[in-house]
Amino acid sequence: MITREIYLQKLRLLKNQDLIKVITGVRRSGKSTLLEAFRNELLKSGVGSENIVFFNFEERENIKFSDWATLYDEVLSKTNPNQKNYVFLDEVQLITGFEKLVDSLFVKKNIDLYITGSNAYLLSSELATLLTGRYLAINLHPFSFAEYTLAFPEEKNTDRLFRQFINNSTFPEAVNLSKAAPELVNDYLQSIYDTVVKKDIIKRHNLRKFDNLQRIIEFLFNSVGSLVSPTNIAEQLNKNSDKKISHNTIIKLIGYLTESYILYAAPRYDIKGKELLSTNEKYYMVDLGLRNITQTNQYDADLGHKLENVVYLELLRRGGKVFVGKNNDKEVDFIVQKANNEREYYQVAYTVNDEKTFEREVSSFRNIRDNYPKYLLTLDYDNVIVEGIQKKNVIDWLLEK
Image (cartoon, rainbow, N blue to C red; front, top):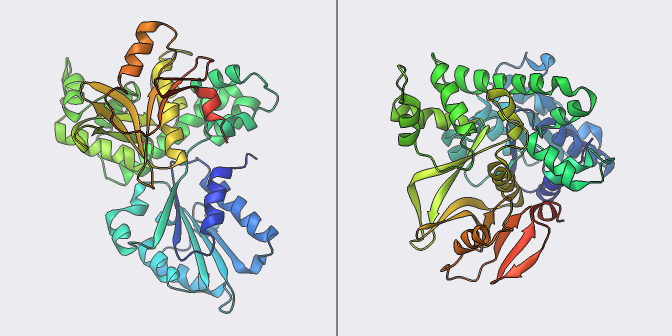
């Protein structure tokens, strides 16, 4: 089993803090495994098994808990009122009235509460309002490159391993399958895709037509790292098509896709004007391997945009809000707003070995008047500082501790 250290460390810091720990993320990204790993750490640290209550609501034996009140009584019956208890509720959104359950358990001073969910409904406006200031969300992604390398200890060539990483799936079980039965990986990814689309989107939102959603998914999967807007999506999809799709429908369906964590939106930020822009965003995939089941995805094709997708997800893992930057008439690939109100700027390119490409990438940083760090990430081998810009090999950067 690959240790998800970056997430375990967060849970260790949050242990016994007066907050609900909310672990979110796309289905099959490893939320249940993370909870189990943390539970095992608690046991090794001396917490008694009788002080740990664990429910996974996707398991058959827990279907009987159809309402929150019955489950609340069941949880309390398993806790010791005179000792600290650790309560884990996995996929809690499957319980009717789960908001009341979470709120009722949280007020118990002898309970340290951890919950997971596979779509943003878990932190919908109603629950977020109910629990304002009382929860901290940890968004779990499939394997990072550092985690991916742990799954292939026999492969010492990190360049070759990275090429494999950027072209294939990083879902934990898909990685396992790629070693044991690679011919089944796409079938597994198809099952994840179908479950997310059918359960988290179509069923939950009572969609009658699947065609429009499928068209938008394929368009956005094919537009990773490109600036798009509902207007130009509509123009492209309605071109030479009898099935017209409206601007408002596109906005709604994209919202459903980001709620299910299958896509992430990076809004644009005007560096000079110091404001968010309402037009054009970039969308990134939670797992690049999903492109293999929705379109013809050639190995080693579109590597620049794939690389950008990898960097975007890594920046999310490392913390902070990630935006696409606008600097006058130039685009900065990413601006990261850190919790301490500091910033980092990133440009991502496959290579900048020729002078013209290097100048294009570096020019995006010029006229940024602050002194926050600026990084140029490429697959070139040199790690140097040019004009105050730190040029780094992206593989080295991904493997930094």
